[in-house]
Length: 109
Length: 109
DNA sequence: TGTTCATATGAATATATTATCATATATTCA
DNA sequence: TGAATATATGATAATATATTCATATGAACA
Image (cartoon, rainbow over all chains, first blue to last red; front, side):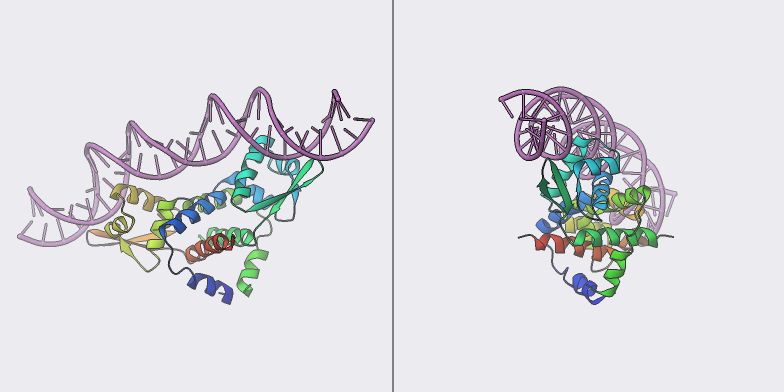
């Protein structure tokens, strides 16, 4: 384990009920395949809504609704560029959290 | 970032649709407050079902149902000790994943 | 200005998930 | 063996969540 990782693990310390609820709410964002696909689609950088729709082959309204929840959770951010809205990841930990999950899955025999 | 962390982030590379679905299923486990409380209750080591029920102040059936899903996801494991079943965390990444989420939450202003 | 393109949003439907209740199973011990 | 204790499980009810459809909003440009 890297030092930063050790620090993180040790920092879990005390977590109150409210914080555990907040954590659950956060992880809920990663717990939906549409949302996690959106985040993955943004790994390489910002994309507009239409591009995300194409990537996931899903209808625009569904994507917009999910982008809204992701934004509320501060996992993506948006900026306007003319008619389009450009979305990008808004958190350094998004990739880490997904990587952690991937490690877990790959560990299984 | 520690070296291990960098390695993890870089290892995300290509993830296919199936893998993203598996990831979503995994994070779903963390996305429920009952389940995340159970995992947190097991941070210090194994506990039997009754102890977990007391910790969370929830009825035994609900806890057993959730323990079952956590076990299916290989996040907890169980062993019998007489009449009791002792549950414990079954993954080194559980604490890391929760720590990552905690970092995200604490980062918000 | 008004038409077109891109995105957002509200309401309704469809679906998934969780907790509860009743009961079954497994273990211990008298 | 049979009573007591601990846990698991199936079915149901309660609730939450995601997607769709219709439409609204906002920007660009002729």
